Amino acid sequence: MANTSSAKKAVRKMARKTEVNRARRSLVRGFLRKAEDAITAGDKAAATEAVKAAEPVMMRAVSKGIYHKNTASRKISRLNKRAKALG
Image (tube, rainbow, N blue to C red):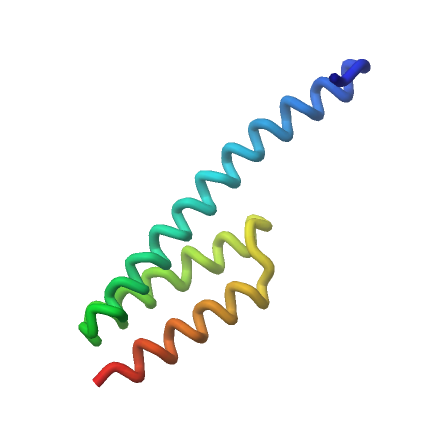
């Protein structure tokens, strides 16, 4: 356990930040899951809309430090590729 007051404060800050990051990560996963479900269902219009909705949420998570930029770009790119492949 932390001994100094500054260390105790740091523990409190980390706990708050962890909760915020967990909520943001969960939000992103929900959007990605909707996109995945639309793609696997084979509905091109719904898949395109879901991917368009997921992209800004994913990039916002990047700006908040939840994901690395390349990770988000890779995921969005792969989702777009799969959505466009639907016929």
